[in-house]
Length: 201
Length: 389
Image 1: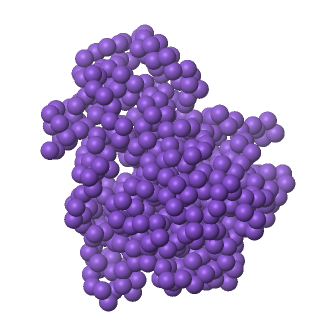
Image 2: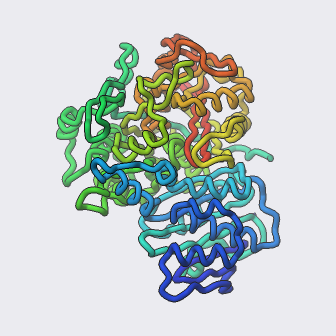
Image 3: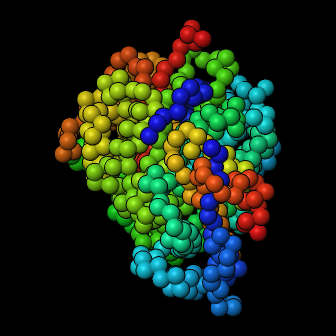
């Protein structure tokens, strides 16, 4: 059986949606960090490590938690993770770069540096959900539904994973858009470019 | 889990690399045969007041080699390294660079220095990828894989999978990362930089030495295209996360163990059939010990293992690819490269560290890598001979 989209979650423009249903609206004019903290509290994610994370990991852990906690299915222990974005981990990169560009005052913080790789977001999701599974992080100029379809399908066809949590997790200087979706070879919405483009809108 | 049957065979060929030891594969292999290392004492007060050890490319040398290529436009140091690494593949396969030929870039930080420069666009990894794809004439959308220190070897695995499921006929894989203040200062803040040229698996190891490099390889399902005498089939691959810690490996080597086990199951290869292991071997206490745990759990403790980190330093997103290219070229010659810096066994479990160049018939090579975010990758390669076509 072909993969279908089983569930999806969007976080964008100050709002959170699960399977297209709006679950939360932030305060008008919220900056990203205030907004995502509001989401974290509203959904009672209760995962204090959240506060140490860089913006990319905060967005990724929030979107994946809302999706995975909000569905009535067990998580496959070999569910693969396939994330992508445009700006890598730009905000924390700038923070680390600033900290080492202060001349005599330069001081690199290990707590920042550890987040200066985009795939740390995969590590955080894997730790929270105890997923010893396939995972990879890709960068494109914009949301690339064709690639996510091709690669997620190759992961299940080649039996590397029985399901795949895919996503576009983009955040840069208060502009953010998270779209995560679970695909699996069972009944659901057709895993097509058209559907993905509609769902991220 | 049932493994798929009758997968399309996928081959790698025409590897190349650009490192401080040489700007092409031949010079690199000769350098290693001559017992050289790219690691030197570096004096750069912008990075550290006291001299430190690193593997840094001579930029005059790079400019001179690059000036012989015929690309128009301004390219950064890293882009020039990648273009040099790609030159042979682009020329050899120029008739096949169509829309069924994909390209994957592996890099952790790309043009990270752009953060301090005027052209901020250059920071973005897709910008670098598009620029290079356009220069060499690849029409398909470039794919960038940024998965910490496993990126380079994982890129070969991704290429294999996309070819096996019919998305592409061929893929070019290119990886690169620079020696940057960004990364150096970060590892310093972790107190992970070695005070000496790094010593993987040795008792006196005290951390990593950083390096810079670019490397490339051609991945194809069509072995008739391959001109070289020896080439390799990618017979198994897996990348399993530790789900343990974002900046330290699992103490039991769980993710690496599972990655190797899965790759061996797919390849239907048993431990004694593996002829050598090109490991990650960063020379941090935790990494090397973790690898010893994982290799012992799959009964590989007697198989010759080598880390190339004491020759090239840790080249981040290029490392897995560079080390594959070197390892396979040595396998062509039935040689195992030396794991420099190893004298006294510094692990709680046995491993057969190959610290001198050794002659051995090599048919099956295991490449592994592990990195931040709990990432691990294992890929198995099997030698093919052109007379077997």
